[in-house]
Length: 493
Image 1 (tube, helix red, strand yellow):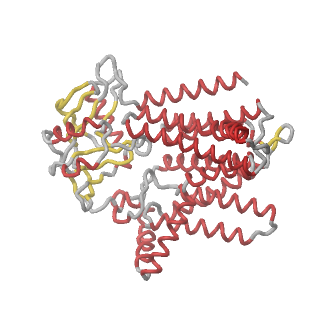
Image 2 (cartoon, helix red, strand yellow):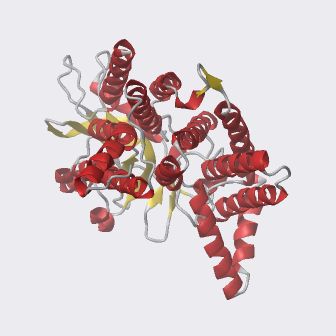
Image 3 (cartoon, one colour):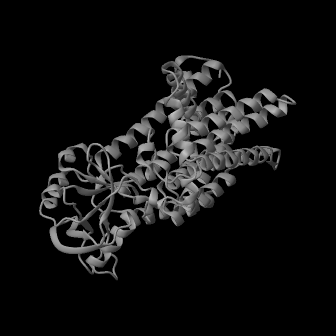
């Protein structure tokens, strides 16, 4: 047992360290003596090209580290292409400090830009190699909006704009939209998305408002945070197995959604036609993650209901209604095409069927498979390897969460006498400790994220918080509740 724990921690620590070094801002080539390189790109209107980092959520210049076999200019040209899909000519050094070297760059071809009402230019960054893993968006920011963005390094804001004023500009190809870059399959679906938005807008004021409210309500059923918040309730009031079954379904749905989005690498509707955007979203479009998750949960619920209610036609109708409304909602928001939601619904229903089948499997002395540490160790390792291969931070966080669940399962095996509370007051006390500690962990991680622009620090801190949730919920909270009950003089447990 100790050996398996040591192996898990070693593999996970190695993976986190490798990922951090690959993404870190301060990685450097000792041969070149340069910590990193970045590109200052402007247009004739004085707008500065900034990219949004996916891990930190902050804005900075395109660029990265210098490999041992590369010159700084070659490394910068490569990094800019990987992050923005732009080919650039690297010019003179504009600034140099301990963080690296900033170069004045010009695009080899006119920048393809769609400008919105406030003058901000949007680039088709979904074509870049690192979109979805490292980069969320690339924008041409007007000088008047320089103070509206959070920079990766707070002390660099003024420096970047002072350098932008001295940098030779790149030509711009102003476009109304990016429909010319849209696959023919998606061009044929443009009318479905725009038609749905038009139909809702043309309803009466009351009907339109009610429809939008219904869409907002149904959208909650596609948010993974909503179901994660339900896990403690399942644990306390439905039992250990039910909570782990829900978690397994959530992790499976998120993994499939994230992996397929990266594999298909298809743009969202509002990336191609900015006028379609009503809701916010990032990353690629297929499958619809919200529809997949909602379909997985409601299908699993229906299958469970069918075991106790022979026909359960009402449950089936409700499950189908949720899937249809979720699909319409995601199309209305302009974040998915019709094909995305159909694929998401089919995948989610399939995952639910598989999870229900796995949920019924037992090993040893009729022990449910989903409550065994070995299964969660396997899930953790597979997710870590997948995250390493695809370099996706969300998969790292899921691997960390699975590692935390594994830790909790080992505890339950080592200390089988530590039973959860049976009385209602004991359950409520345990639930209070779960939410109190969980909120504290998430708040601490959020606080660290707010004060640093270093991707590797954010990766490690958020991963640690994700791992900590398992031991806190499965180990610490019940023990603290037991201790609190004793201190309060409650005899029942």
